[in-house]
Image (cartoon, rainbow, N blue to C red; front, side, top):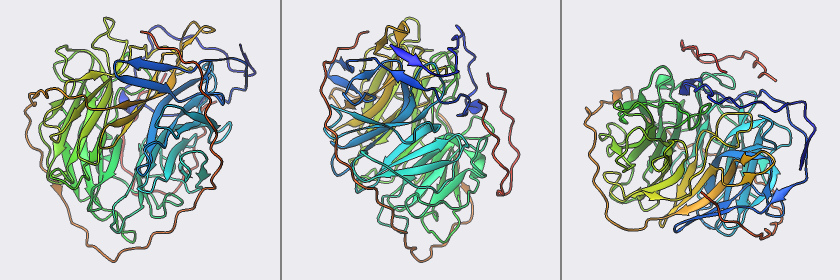
Length: 539
């Protein structure tokens, strides 16, 4: 039983919730904390499908499932010096009867088999849009969005067991960040960008030269790109991939001088990227996104070194429903991109291949995962699928089912979505995936509930089909003045968290799965403003 001490009533879920345009999306503080006295748990879920095993990460102190909560939008970080150590951050809803969410996280020391969920970053503090990363030494970083649309970095030096809060703020809604792991002048720098519609103070991009403790004044990015990700090549060049603030165009944007701390970053190369379609909303995730735009750079040191790749789940012009997972690559530092290649290999049309994401392994292999409805007659039930490429994305392996079917529309915590993304981090033998699914059944609610899972994916051999690329003209980079390199700045040392003792996970019996309005931020000074479209009203 779960006893609630909240003034929040249980909302009735509409049979046909309104679907948002992707640009309407925002993370808003619209419900107060719900105070609960939880009395019930159940065995945590281990879901096996073929050769893949998914382990539940959002478990209580005894390693059990927490009945009546919800967890989604997971982001994973892996220690590159010890792959047994990983941490996943997620949006934690202590009860599905409330939309109030906090910064949850779990960690593992045995390669993802057992997970410890110590709690949230700050009790009764609204947090959303978790993004996690690791530097080359295995220090974890957790970027978290506040109700003010400001965000801040948390650091862990003990594998995610405890976190230190860096008070420096920047950011905005749908923020994402990367870390410069090269040996160049920008080593250890953090770069983040966000949606200009809902900023902390101003701008769309900021840089930290001291490991996330402080952030420089925000600046604008060409085309105001949103809902994407950044990465850094071996030469220290920063790349940002995303969608135009004003239309549905995809862009790859480069800054060669962001790595120099005494210079204001210039974005001197701007390239349009054809991904074979456009982002759309859908019944699989009505109040959320069905896709973000993911960019990643190859740092393998081999023939594909410094290739720039982009991936997104998009709707082709010939479809009336659903999306495909589409990929494009650049071999010339983002100046031009290949025609788009479809990764999902099913012969169906109008099916949903959504939440597509990928990562690049240290040896240059590409791993992609996504949710897929190809096996669902209702075009709603979804499964996690996997494919990989060993030829820089020119061809992709036969798609492999990784999870059982689940209903993404069950377990909603007064918010009609299962988050906005999933994530993967690859190594030379496979990929570590954090995703949300509804395998656990909540008898008190009469439906399944949202939980966070970890699964290891890996190449299984077999022939690699050759997809037919969609013809498109090669875009031309927009040339601007190139920055001039200056002396190497010295980065400020990053504060170190205090280590804590490692709790011992408790093994449990494991069933097998079957099929208050946001306050208006105070005006602040900002860079030269640009006109922007007004988002449509939200439900």
